[in-house]
Length: 296
Image (tube, rainbow, N blue to C red; front, side, top):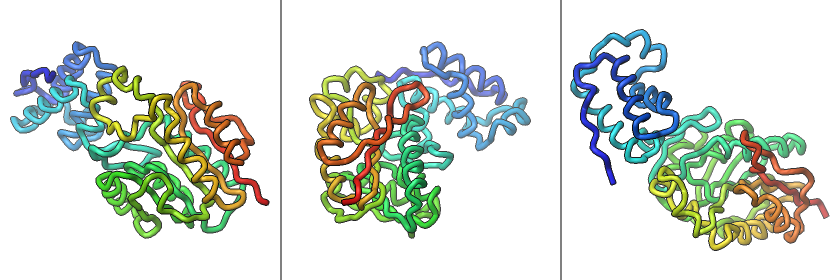
């Protein structure tokens, strides 16, 4: 239920409005209230941190105060900052979001890190990359940004998500090295690919109502729901990827907490070789699980 927030920002200076917003967010028991307040007021004013400090004594206009009050109301109701602003940074790159895309999270950068490790070991010229369930295109476009001669394909069931990813590719100057295809997993792709990456849905269905409001009410359930045990997507994705990988090619997928070992078992069953432990995220959770297709 949306909680109404009075416009306490009218007539306030930038600095006092920032402090008032942070206090509102703290009173709503939101984590990172200070950071969220700074990001939101920066977005309203079009100022970076230096600008906020330099202009801290300036009074907000009525339009700015009204916009900030709207943002405060939405944040207190549980809407993530990235959804409010419609953008999120991932791998140092800006990504537009839509209702059909997940908010890219720092944990997912471990998939990019592991994929780059594996690619650099192979030293492949003009590699082909596939990103399955691409969403905003974050993983694929981060890899294309790092590998200048690579070409990538992103797949998704959602046409809205594909449009978002295509727009992000164009905005990042990567449109001519990427393509986006509507299909289930790799069904419309023939390969061979040197890298296949994915952040598939892996939350067990019964766990979704227990997620934070930021996730359960604002992330698309299609990108979250991994079926009864959380492994439905992996059971389809891994065998398809094994068929479409080039010899020596690698598959890298994101895993939920406690899932890495079972995913490795599925990879081995598809004749992929797991030659290193999963890459952990900053919390120490095994997050990026990888395997190679060995040459015949």
